[in-house]
Image (cartoon, rainbow, N blue to C red; front, side):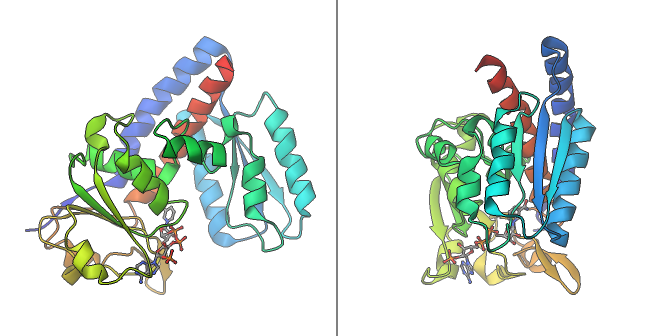
Length: 293
Ligand code: NDP
């Protein structure tokens, strides 16, 4: 069997077309253009690429974006002062702090300072807590992207065993919360999974991954999910983005696993475009919330 390709670029295109219409309608009804403020500290080349692509995507769907560039050695208090200013600005609806931040800055203090109604990455404890309680304000971007790719790719999750490899606060943990919930904005078929979360201390990882109906890899190690770890017929979502001498690689050994999986996402062109798209979705959602707040 060769797996059906879950084409993240095409699915992201579909959602962006829908978002463009919704943004145009919002602007017409409110006379306000939703605006994302991005904060980029230092010169990290990957971060610069990510911020550029997020701003370009905003433009494509009719959202405004502003970029605040700060030097690598910016004092933490200056960064906090900028966030306070953006929190108070009625022209800014979403705030994105591009990670990673330099070591002298406490990332948790910065992310906690973003107003929960402008927290389009859904990193604020208030938003994480709401997600854990099954009443999210914003869905975290990458996990939401995984849900969308499965939903639009025709892979139901309700009642199925999803194994997630990786327990980070950005991907593994919030994805587990979304999948465990009793409902989702995409309907109950995109929730109600039985979820197992694995990590670097998991014993006999391959035995667990082979029990998955849906396997999500969010590890950060190129090709660490091999064909031996995947049962034939499993749907495989590869969140990993790893820079290798041969170019970008996922966490999954794509060439071997595609021969036995039912569905598979490529890297690049899988989850990545969805992550950016769900950020746009959250910026519009934030603007809507602020209109009624
Ligand atoms: P983290 O480094 O924060 O987390 C990696 C997780 O993988 C940890 O929980 C770690 O376990 C686990 N892990 C590491 N080695 C193993 C192993 N040998 N066996 C089992 N588990 C292991 O990474 P992120 O979650 O932030 O990112 C994961 C990947 O996804 C990266 O490649 C990243 O670039 C990519 N990514 C892609 C996005 C997209 O839009 N496509 C968005 C965000 C991330 P432990 O907790 O025990 O250390």
